[in-house]
Image (cartoon, rainbow, N blue to C red):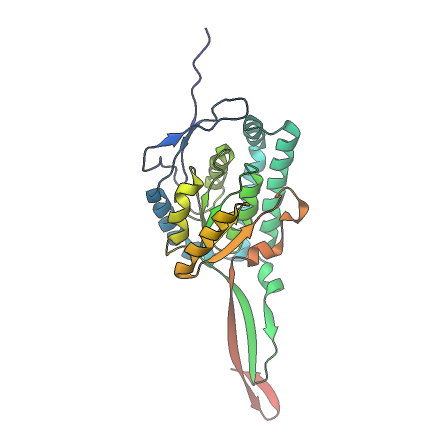
Length: 293
């Protein structure tokens, strides 16, 4: 007998847990063959608010961790993704990718996590500076994380664009709320399972599925979100984000690129979500010798 196919229900990821959407709604996107990908949670404004609360609660602990520890956790994420690479390849193929492209995307996602793991304890040394001043002071500029970042994942690929934008954000000590790919959401929630087994504290990364247009106003106007990253090429969406960001002067970053390219990883993706803190330290001249106090 031909058995009845049971579609998997993919839940959202908030605060290190996998709740169903507060709205109890779901949708079933299809691949190019007309096959339903699964029962996908259709997240609501309440889910967005819950995710932002989780991200804000996690920010203090995550930003205060040593850079070396953040590096270890990102490397662990790469290890866990490597261990489940066959599942990710299968999901990417089911969502429409060829086998060769799916394997390349998964391998690149693993390498990208390792790349940013390597930068965690080095970017401050490279980007910070000692500034020349005309007074008797040392003047230092150092980078500090921005805070909670709202992320709108790209729609062209299912995994690599998600990894490419989340990795530099959390490598720099930020937390984030991610609105996943609307039409190819499977890899996003499976990636959340990787995060959940990678020593990453709950709330550092929160992933919501559903309609980006529906959640965009809630996320971009939320007063506890400090920055927004949009991966896409819709000029109207960019304009809306910029207008909404004015309310509390959110930092806005717009990326319209092929995340499979070699230049889609860069130190400056970390600094895009960093604030510069400048410190003045006085110098005392005693008997012709210079000292600080």
